[in-house]
Each structure stands twice: as structure tokens, then as C-alpha cells.
Amino acid sequence: MKLNGVNSSDTWIFVLPKSCMNGDGDNIVMSLPHPRTDKNTKFLINVCDETCKLFELNRHQNECSSWIFNEQSVLADGSLFISTPFDPLYLILNELLNEETGKFVLINQLFSGSCELPDVGLKLLNCLPSLEQMENIAESTGTAEFTAYRFNEAKTLRWLKAKVERLADVVSKRGVMLGVDPAEGATAFAFGLISDYLPSKLSTKLGRYLGIEDKIKKRKSCGSQPSAKKAKEEPVEDYSKQLKTSNIVNKKSRPRSHKCLDKVDKRGMKTMSSFFTVKSKLKD
Image 1: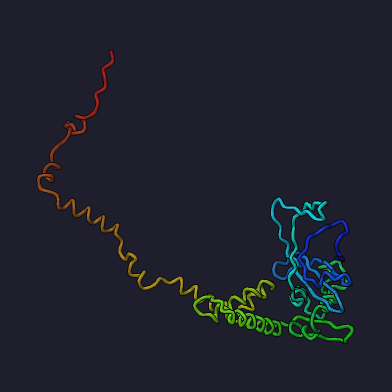
Image 2: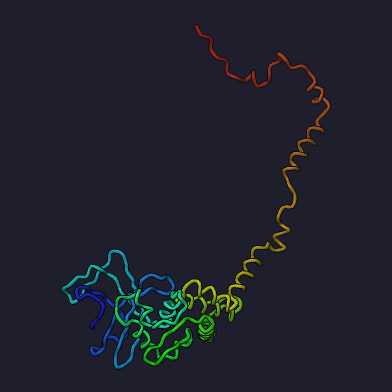
């Protein structure tokens, strides 16, 4: 398999779909900031038969592991790269959010500072089923050859809401039980999965847009209040005051003979404990 963007001296182990193993196809490995973590993550673009697909390469590595291949060679790096399909709009959306000028920008200019490979933006656009999908997250202007885009928050939130609802519907149909309210649990579960591919600020806005954050806050506020049963079981009096008052009562209820003994002059009198102490030997 031919890999562009990888040194010829590097040897990696991949788990890829059969379409990527076609000898006539072209596979491009590149590093781009992940939308959620903003850390460089490896992605693979597969171009075959005029179709273009994007995959995320998830690296799995165990300590003290290596690979033996061709029955002759040993690869010290025991990493395994597993490919999973990735929606190109998430990568484009992340770069649009990072464009702080708020102006229309050509797609290749968006990725000029995050990837060394040329024409990355156009390659990602080719991975989309149609260019009309860009209208889900951005406004566009220009001609068919030179189209510039600008982030649109309202469009993006509507698009993400539709994705959450479709995913929640699939989860519900499969009978996955999530919480007391199945519909609400499926929506929260789908929201969590989609948020794994969104920047934290956009994820927070989506949660508010779906009303999920308000429900979580209500649950927390309800959970912080003790129930009526627990409230009854909690002590409502200060027992230390009762102990102090009990000592005073005990002193008042002492017998009369003890009270008279307290008035006796005890100077020069030995205590009972002095008769039981060990006497020290006299020195010669």
C-alpha cells in the first residue's frame, strides 16, 4: 500500500478497509488538530476511482510490545493504527471557528497554518458527498472556482441538532436503556458522542440549544436538597447543651452528706490513693 506524507523508512501497522488496499488508489497521511482536543492527530485520505474518503487513525499501543512480520523482520514500535470513518465537516468547522477575523476565507487558507501538505482544504472538500454540505456550517460567497466561507453559528447548531436527533433515534430503536426516561437518555447519549468531535465552547452552546444543560442543572439542584425522610432523621438539637445541663443537674441532686463533706477542711489529710502508692526506699 502506498502512503503519501510518510517517510519511506517508517514502517507502521494499520487496520484499513479493503478500499484503501487497492493498488491503483492513493492514500495520504496527514496530521491535523483534532476538533475536541486541538492536539495533532493523524488522518488518512483515500482517493480511489474518483471517490475520496477520510479516516481518523486511532493509535493503540501497549507497553513492551513489538511486531514480527515477513517472518524475518522485527518492528520495535508495537503501535497499531485503526482507521475509522471521519466526517470532514468537523475538521473544516474547527478551522472556521479558529478564524477570528470573521471574514470570508478560501478553504485552503484555513489550513495553511495547521498542515504542511498543500491543498488540504480542497482534499477535504472532495471527501464531502457534495459541496452543498458546507451550507450546513457556513455562509459562502464567490464563484464556483473560488468560493470563500464564513462560520455561521445558527446553521451549525441546527445541523448538529439534526445529527443528535438521528443518532438518538437509532439508539432508541435498538432498545438501549439509558436512564429512567429512554428518550431523554438517548438524546443525552447522542449529545455526548457528537461532543467528542466538537470544541468545548461549541459543545456547551449545543447543550444549551438542546436544553440538556438546563435539565442537568435541575437534577443537581434537586439532588443537593435532602429528602424529607433524611431531614427528619438529622439531629435538630444540640446534644452538647444537654450534657452540660445534665452535669449541673447531677451536682444539684447530690446527697446531703456529700455536700457537708465538701465543707470540711481537708488540709493535712491524706487522700485514699496515697495509701496504695509504692513507698520509695530510703538511701543508706
